[in-house]
Each structure stands twice: as structure tokens, then as C-alpha cells.
Image 1 (cartoon, one colour):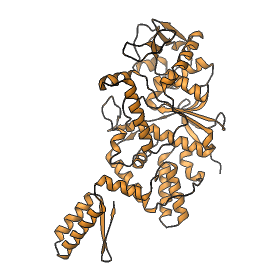
Image 2 (tube, rainbow, N blue to C red):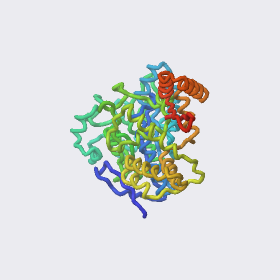
Image 3 (cartoon, one colour):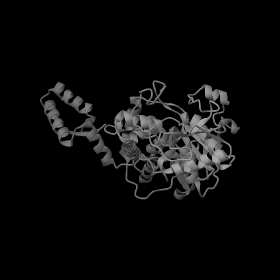
Image 4 (cartoon, helix red, strand yellow):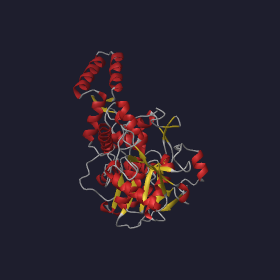
Length: 453
């Protein structure tokens, strides 16, 4: 059966069949990190979601037919502020955060995008696009600033499905006496003496935030492409402004055909964000949580729904993966998964539905049929889970629990002696100490066997 992919398109507010512009060259652009601080798990959710979409598209159309672009914003007000607070140069800050970001992506076992361009490598293209917008009458210069004139673009607000006055009232719009109207947004602005700057026809300065995505998507994907993704908080103003400046600069009726946005991760039903201080950085998990556990947790809710974070979620995912490793075997030859297995992912990236499929495949694999095991492990591998060997998984648990085999065997010997001496209270104390360290013991056929829980 040749299944179709369906995605919820925020441009129409409907779930639509995905029809690529050119199935031999499918373009997807996803807004990546602004590298002023280490990514938190709220940032990790779109990384995981769009990585899964990337995998689904490659499975459907072929690995070399998907052009996935995920940008890095390395010039921004937040970056300048953070470098001052940390008392380090902007280049040192951005290089450090980019390295940590790439490490986080590897930790989560994400596929590398086709391109990962940086904003500062494309300033010349931004200047070129601004000049084009001025020439065409969509932008104006005043006091070395350049603004996009929103009233000149009649479809402004279409992505948000709101009127312009409602958008302005419900968001923080930059106030400036240089603007003709409050809704106009900056394309270029002067830099202060201690800020990054580039020469331009409007004086030394730097670009506005939204412009970089318009220029980099144009360079790598063309004037019009298939999919644009990001967090739901980017719909306005970022994506709305991208559409306006791109369509006007490129003289097109469409910028991207499908707009996909993931919902927030929350803690106690409040959005997780650096501004609120309720954040958990990805790097903080690495010592005690295997990357595939974190990934399964991020997949546990549908991307369109908020995911409320709690410690029980991680523990449940760890228990699930631990159980799945009971039937693990190394898949030597990559198999092509049946579209029936992938069908939940084809249906608007229904990751909870796919996890349910994995549970069913695990139940079959428990019967010791090797073909069923291969199928189960392959289905896990498809989304980047069970990517480590069983030995690596056990070693990680040992490291986390700070106990080695010799310590375990010594404690079991002491417990067996206590039982022989009928000191059952002491035997129970030793059993509980092992349990606290994640070690389960079982007395069977006159022997004591153990495993990590």
C-alpha cells in the first residue's frame, strides 16, 4: 500500500495531504537556535519533531531527495547581551554554544541536516535583499535604519489568522520614532561601538532578526519551497515577517507551502523559557539520562499538543527502553519498514501512535522469533532509539549508579552469608541497598542472580 503523508498546515489551519513541488528535490527549512545560551529541552522538542519528519520524508522519497536546512542565528540582541554578562567575546560565546548545540544533537541521535548555515555568513545576501525591497517600494530608510512597510503587503497576518491590529495588541512590537507605523519591522539598524557591524549602503550596522531566514532559505531552497517549521512562538512576528519580506522580494505568491509548528513544553502548565527561569538544559541530563530516554519522552505527546514535563515521564521512558533492551539484537542489514508500521508518522507525525506500534512489535519480539526482533529493533532505530548496543546501555546504567560488578557480587556474598546465619533483617538491608542502586536480585535454583532494573 502506498500511503500518503498528511501534515497540519498552519497556513490553512487544516490537516492536508503533503504534495511536494518536486518529489525529486523536496525542501524543508526549520528555524534553529539563537546561540546565546545552551539549548533547553523546550528547544529540543522541535529538534526531535523535525528530525522525525526528515526521516519520514527520506523513507518515502529517498535519502538524497530531501534538502533539510536548519539555520543558526549568531547575531542578535540576546547574543550581545549574553556576551557582556559572561564577559567574553561574541565569537567565543557563539562558538561555544554552537559546539554544545551540535553535541546535544548527537546526544539525541538526530540526523545531520543537509545544511546548517550561520546568519553571519550571509550578510551580503541580506543587504542585497534589503536593497531590492527598497527599490520595489516595500521598505524605507530613515536615520540609517531600514524598515519593512507592513501596509504594503496585503496578506500580512494570514499565517496567524488574525487582523493586524490584533497581532500588534497581543505582542511586544519594537517601539521607535523612526517608524512610519508601529507594525513596521526593522531590516537593518545601526550598531553601537561595541556591537558587531558590517558596511552597508545605510551605514555600518547589522540586520534585523527575520531577514536571515529569508535569505538563507532562498539560497539553499529557492524562492518557493515545501515545508517551513519551528516552534509555535515563531508564528508571529518571525514567520509572518519572513513571509512578507520574502514574497515581496522574490515576487512570489507563495513562500513555503506547508507551515508546521510544534507546541510548547510546559512545567506545571507554564511555558518553559529562559525568560521565566523554569528551564532544564539538555546538557544537564547527559550525566544521568541516556539520550534515547530523553528522546522517547519528547515523542510521548503529539507535537501539536503541549507536553507537560515531570520526572515521572523520564522514569517511565527509562523503564520502557530497559524493557525493550530485553529483546535487543544488533541489526546488521538495514531493512525497509512497511508503511503500515510507519502509518502513525505519516498521519501528521503521530508519535504517540508510533510508540504504541513499538509496544505491539515488542510483544511479538518477546516470543523469540528473530525476524520479529529484527523488525522491532529496526522500527526503534528508525526514530533513533535502541541506537546503542545492549552492553553500552548496561554500562551507562552502571556508570549512572556508581556501582560495579565486583561491588554487587560482594554485597550478594554478604547477603547470602546473612541468610545462612538466619539474619534475615541484615539480608533485607543489603537487598534494599542494592535496590537503591538500581540492582534487582532474585534467588533461583539455589543461586542468586542480578540485573539492573
